[in-house]
Amino acid sequence: MNIFSLGLNHTTAPVDVRERVAFANDLLGAAHQNLLARSGAREAVILSTCNRTELYYSTNSEEAGSVSRWLGEYHHLSSEALQPYLYLHQGDEAVRHLFRVAAGLDSLVLGEPQILGQLKAAYQQACQAQSVGPLFNRLFHWSFSVAKRVRTETAIGGQAVSVAFAAVSLAKRIFGNLYSQQVLLIGAGETIELVARHLREQGVSQMTVANRTVERALPLAEEFDARVISLEQIPDALEQADIVVSSTASPLPILGKGSVERALKARRHRPIFMVDIAVPRDIEPEVAELPDIYLYTVDDLQDIIQENLQARRSAAAAAEQIIAEEVAAFGRWRQGLETVPTIRLLREHADRLRRQELERALRHLHQGQDPEQVLEYLSQGLMNKLLHQPTVALRAAGEGADSSGLVAALHMLFDLDKNP
Image (cartoon, rainbow, N blue to C red):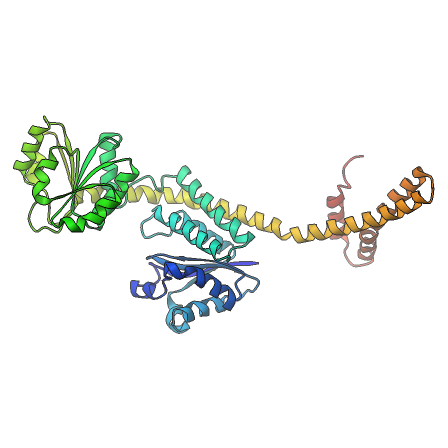
């Protein structure tokens, strides 16, 4: 059974092409079944994210064209239009690609962890569609283990490489843990949502969201059990905030030096950690001059991100070595799997001979023959039948040009060189 991975991603296709071959989440089950029914695939998993669409499948055929044609037809695209953006991996290279995807080595952001969750979800959807069999069950669980090993044994995911994650990581570095910290989030856009998600993962339970339009902030507040206030209420909330993260589209600063000074006085100069992600700035630069204020801008975070990206690139070399080891290990498992049918046939053959000799021995016993003689006949008959075909084959090989291979195999199989 051959393993393939066929697809396109952010490095091979522009966003308008990726959009056209994306699979709607609620239609994935039907897509799996359609793929199996209309191509030569025996097992399949479809992974579809904003950055990639990939089909992992197994087939008895060496030719992968039927699946690429299916992909085009499913999305009403001609093969000619789609082909320039596709890549195809087969065998060990397909396994390697899957392991690299799971570990975040093939992601837009090197080492990002979200892809592993997306891959697990894709596998679960394939299981529900009954498009996964024994081979892919083992392959995908193996890929999850590889990703875990890479993250455990390397620093590939240990450094912040997004603005939101960098902001939260910096806060954690300053406070140690964030469980008891009160957070004020200014804005309700995508970046603030990511910050809130990372804060929740760090155990933060006390969040306040301030936004110009309170109604727009309500869905975000409901998701993270946060309080919602207007921008006019920020001065009061600032007195309670240990961490402030701001990201709005305001053309003018929202927090000035005077309001922060008043908040510090009310806090009796307990420090405040501030991150201004907005461009233009939401927090006046002069705020950084105040004692007990730790203010970082988006430029400060970018410096951290670049340093951390370099650290991830260094860790990627170790991750690639781990993946090479795991690809080889999976290959050995597959080779062992290929011998299973032969082992089954051999055991069935031996059991058939055993039952024949046993039935004959039982008939002799019922006829009153001596039990010791019957056992002798049983053992002799079983030995002769088991060794008959190997003996015939060995004699035939001896009459040919070269019998060394068969002789060596028999020595190994029956351990003939072992001292008695």
